[in-house]
Image 1 (cartoon, rainbow, N blue to C red):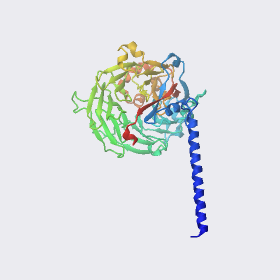
Image 2 (tube, helix red, strand yellow):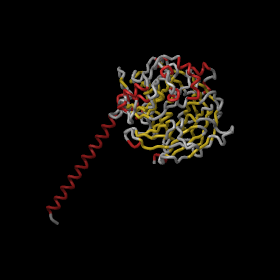
Image 3 (spheres, helix red, strand yellow):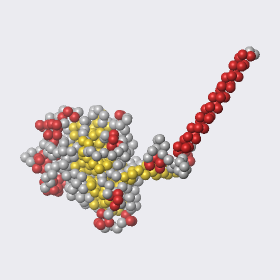
Amino acid sequence: MDPIATEHKVALAEEEMELDQQIGQEAVTTEETRDRRTINNDNEPVATAGSQNKDDKAQDEIDPQQQAYRLYVYDLKTEQQQQQQCQLLSSTGTRYNTTVRKTLENETTLFQQKVDPSLVYDGNNHFRNAKWSPDGCCLLSNSNDNVLRLFNLPYEMLDEQAETDTITELATNFGIREGETVYDFAWFPSMNSQDPATCCFITSVRDHPMHMWDACTGNLRASYAVIDHRERFVGPNVVSFNLDGSRIYCGYENMIEIFDIQRPGQESQKVPTIPQRRTKKGQKGIISCLDFSPDYAGLYAAGSYSHTVGIYDETNNELCLKLTDIKTGVTQVKFSPDGSQLFSASRVSNVISCWDIRNTAEVLYELPRPGQTSQRIVFDIDPSGKMLITGAQDGSILFHDISNGPETTATTENSDSSRLVRSIDHAHQDLTVCATINPMYPWLIASASGQRKYSAAAGNDDSSDESSDDDDEDDKDDNTQHKDSNSIDNSLKLWRVPGHSEWYSYPVEQEEQQ
């Protein structure tokens, strides 16, 4: 064997051994440094570079054998917390405090469709509803001009700790105008702004097919046609996706119709809510609202203008439970996050009812809310299931504590009022039509305002027909209420609600760890 080659191999082996020793020493040094960074002198965890606030400290203290999640808790209950004010962050101001015709003239360049303002109904351009996108990055609104406007959320508002002293202007650069009254609209439940394929929403329009719109380009993706026995297009009064977004559920008179999202057109599954036209069985009337149980129990609720709420099984669409003794037409139903309770709101009613759908099928308690109007007033529940917020007829935003069960309060009007923990008085100068919580950033809430002004449409014979929506049946009940209201406030506002984040944990099963 060549002695030179042997010496060379020995030298390489020695170099490799020295290199391994250096790597081992660096690893030990790195481990000691990390330990020193995460353990202070009192042997307590402290924030590292990736977790520099209290929330991340709490997360670091959780046992690695447990799964952790975070919830935002509102600071509204105690007297000290009530001194913290809800902060107005952004608003559309007085931009929409005008008629439909003037609004369309000012924003013609925003619409994807050509609009001739001289041919449209010239009524008060009030907001009807507003809904957060599932990823919480934008807000979609509907107004009396039949336009759906998309408002992108400024990034600085997504920071829980950010503070600002100025009220920014809430502006839109995107709008879609439908040809008739927009009854309802719904976001695709898996919508994510980082994935353009999921950025879409569906609309229900009077006497038109349902339209699925691309939220990035404004283009029409698909249409789903509801056709009655007379071969006429029917605009459903309510439209909703199921939890996984695979099907579209819509409701109209005595019918729930289901579409496969992958099959646009007329193919659908019709689910009659009554077995025969002349019968007392089933759920009669126009299906006005839908909501799916968020606990994936396979249930969904349907409210009717015939004063009933039905609970259906999603697997076979059979009626499981029927809630009655409701005085007026139901305008909204919403499950609690755990699926054990159902909240409902009705027309010309001053309360929101909480139903026990697991045991007694009776009203547990009622939350007071000024609402002597046929116009929809939309409420929402925070992700923790502890707080319900709603608009009110006097322009305020109400916060109700729903964390405690009925056994802690007597069934009296005074005790129900005790659940009201905060009110933003005069949030709007007109009726607050909706109050909704951001699903991803719950410290942000949005509110919209406005109502029909019959004086603005005086002298126009078509005004009542063009401005009416699915609330037509009871318009006579609140004509006087609207005529006496002279203030005009058609605005959309964003608020920050004081609170803090709390970490919760639950044990991870052995199979899940493996």
